[in-house]
Length: 172
Image (cartoon, rainbow, N blue to C red; front, side, top):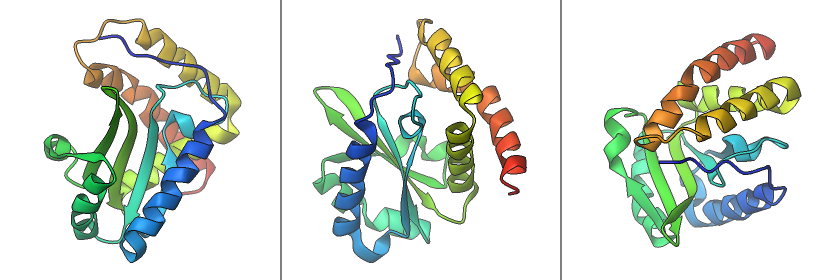
């Protein structure tokens, strides 16, 4: 399986803002916060053309309560990863057989929330690290992976290293 990495698209933030607006109007008080994460949230960073969003809730039960609403909005609830990440509820939106949005619903007080924002924010202010990450992703995209988890796992050491630097940099 090849991974498609494309150059940064300045329309990605607009797509995110549209989704954010839809979620706030659809879920009201169930949502504590919404954040654009992943590579599409970092200006100048090439990425898989998939918008990743953190949908923050106060309690994981709130994430479970919105599953029917998410499905009405055209998102598939993917429960099979809950064994790996039990603190997350995961949704995918498909278009013509390709995933275009990944929604990660987690508690805003949890480590998943904090780590993803630290990583994103660090890349936003360190262009050299952003560019290093892009080169890693481009190199990894040339490998014929058995599945997408192989590609994701291959980035983990780099991401964990940057998360530690980000925690020190931002004093968290």
